Length: 134
Image (cartoon, rainbow, N blue to C red):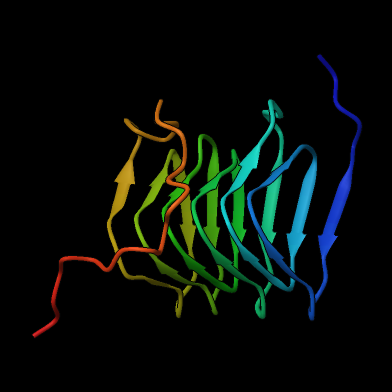
């Protein structure tokens, strides 16, 4: 099955509340409060720009983060964490590239669970973590 080479931009100043399902390329320069999920595109790519914010899970084969992600990241191919990247959650990956200055406040998990069977948590962010920093 071939997909068109589609490009989608969520520009700065734009806020989306709800899950985003896409094919092709998606660039987030604004804010998404919901999960970002690829629809059947093995070559799909997500770019979270330096001012971009995602509050929810990301399930995309190729991910480039230079902004802020509050949620888990699941990548079946490649994750790139640029210098201004901040991830508040676990990063599940097959191949990872991390630049000096990138932050992951969670676990880096190689391989086994890059595409979990469970659907994304629709109530992500509604509960507080049971971990206290003391």
